Length: 180
Image 1: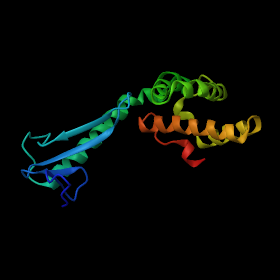
Image 2: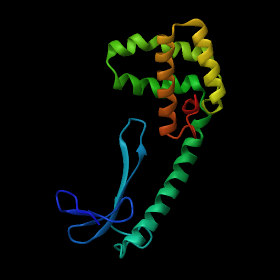
Image 3: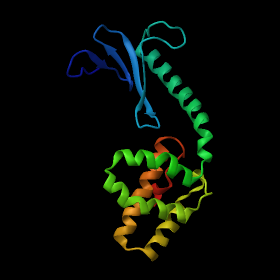
Image 4: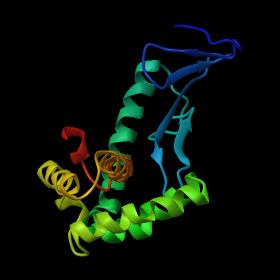
């Protein structure tokens, strides 16, 4: 076990399982981010099954693993409906509001054409989960035939950022741009 700088909490050999300065065992885990980009965390000092304090770090770790698995199963079921979302709907209703909050207005206005170009290429009806790495390569080749390399690089970076956002929010299982 290592002590952190404030000597109040010690880490254990299990990830996300700790002991506080009184020796009480707890787990604290980040489960991802919500639609607004805020972290979703869970911290507890008591067993979720019995309501009793954890007796060992191993017990806390086992409950942590069960909790994370259950949460992911439930979260994927909830987001399973959204994974059938059309790619254009994802861009317009999910990604653009997030992106607009994270960049300056001048940057957003300058990059509007990128989103129009991407939606135009993929169409209004293509589902987010149907996009493959082959589609990404074909899109890149299309862009290279119509735009300068520097413009293609910017479009592809933004495209990858969109798919990464979808992956982080579990709307797609894997980012197909990772293979391009």
